[in-house]
Image (cartoon, rainbow, N blue to C red; front, side):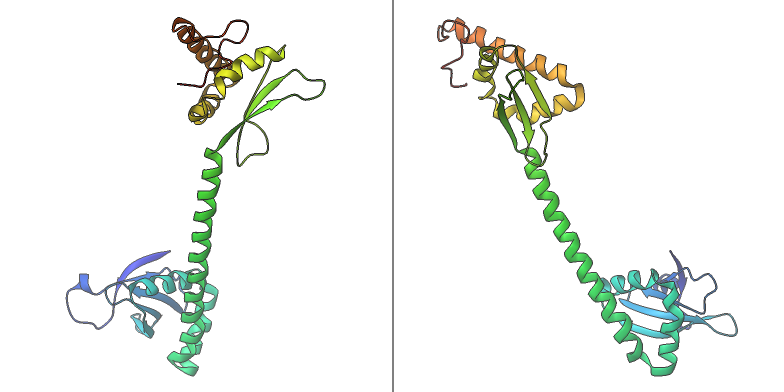
Length: 228
């Protein structure tokens, strides 16, 4: 909600005199900013149709931008600020505008920082995935994978017999470094694709361990395997 214009009556090339005005839609007063000097202004139109500066505060580039941004979002206050200048001079506006704008900028910065920290915490917890065994009453045995920031698991796998689950867990409990990869696969390809990947990984490892002569006999060849 701004446009480029030029200060009235200032010498030097036009590109050095460019300021940014808020779009004022014919209102009597409106804010502007001079990025070159780090000043924020309140302007009005003279009787001959030339913009004039009725109030100017040099705040430095960073603060001036914060003040200008705050002012541009309050067009219903512009006339009131203009009247304050006319009645009470610059100090009347600076106490109302400058202090409030900078206080608002501090609050916004603190909120933005807190949101950044909160997002970092959410990301950290989302990247932390735990493996749980499921022995729910009246349900088939199973296991689940769940992110730390979620109330429900993103993946649940059930089995007809407990030994079938334990066979898979003998492999899966050593794959924690791949849990994020498993979540991405589940998100992109779904439940069945992740089930197949887990079973294929287990079987491939069983084959390698058997070939090396380190497998156990029976239904759980990786029972005493401790990962690679």
